[in-house]
Length: 336
Image 1 (tube, helix red, strand yellow):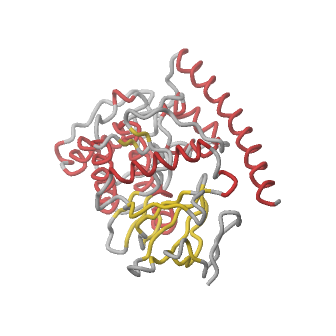
Image 2 (cartoon, rainbow, N blue to C red):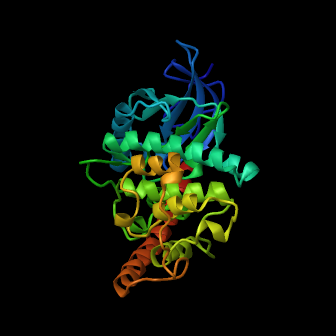
């Protein structure tokens, strides 16, 4: 068998990493790394290898992000979170890599394409498992910040696995910036309003994203739609999410109240913790139905919020352009 080298563009099936892991197939690319399904030669166990792009190996931001994800992985050990198994450096000791548990399952995104809208019991079960995993994360000083169906796997027995802590916030750690600027923004459909406005976020930021996913599981659609990601982000800051009943009429009003509270634009009006969200989902008969604002689903926003949103969205446009330039430079370097 041949062995992949640091200077190569990609690993191929049949190559090995450090004489320890046999590459079986590519699992695709993330914002800053390639992912591979591999087999541990010593144990025979299937694993996932995350290896930074070769053009970013010497980049300090890439190394800082690797160290952040490594520290987070060492903190988190939960049945609903993908497990970090090992770390290492490629041949020559230059590039770091992570070894993660291989999860044999289906991405929630793919599952929703085939089955949405989901039965209430199934959607609630998935959300409760997510809440358990995220409450554990928050108790250990970790906020995920990039929750979306692409980062959730569903195993054959229905077990939920949360993956990809690449832009997670670690309590007490400094803010990281990345050379590949677009990698930190996530998907606009699941970003909380405070993220759009440039805040780092906290546990309530994850509550919002879980609320969006529960809304999507129940209706087959996300709360906000627009002609562009920037339009969606602008709506998120200026407009209350439409009520569930506007898209699905057979749901309990108590469930609608839970989703409505998770999607409040102001963090202080949301569930303060995943434990609180979980409690209401599992004690739905105890949920009090609020008086919804008459303008729910329509724009209600102060001048200050409008100005903040405008400044941040303009900055995001600039960063997106710079990100595209960085991507073109990266591709040109790889092609050499």
